[in-house]
Length: 191
Image (cartoon, rainbow, N blue to C red):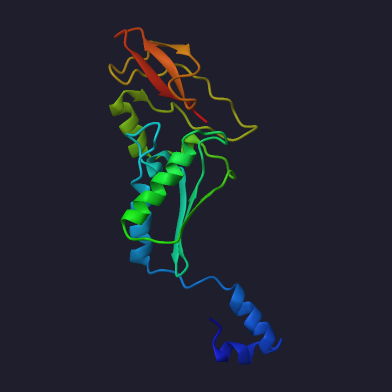
């Protein structure tokens, strides 16, 4: 809301001040309230790799809390990700269970998600779960192309592995076999 003092200072007239007031964002929540909403949304598990949270995965991009409600912004791992609707529903359920109302979940495709956004804790969780984490940074377009020397087996740590299929249990993963321990495993592709 624009105060009378602000309206008096606006040299474009009181009508202009009223128009500006109607376009102002609602008052923002306190830092602890914003932190609480972030923590609730961040704890939502990825539906395809439930050992990861959406924060670990790096798809949780923003949480805003103000008088009009909560707005969460997610970036899908790719534009056709089948899990994004489930992520949205799970975020809505988690925030509703914590007493939040008027929740909006938006999606943004720009900038595009990259495995560089995954947390180090998330990569460690993947490995402990038996999925080889991304092996290098996605890099910049037009930059050097990384050479993939080997994917480390998450079970025995051997680099003696081979790709069995470019596509694993989800589009984000490829399927590998360890030549040392002979165990199959998924590898989270670098995007």
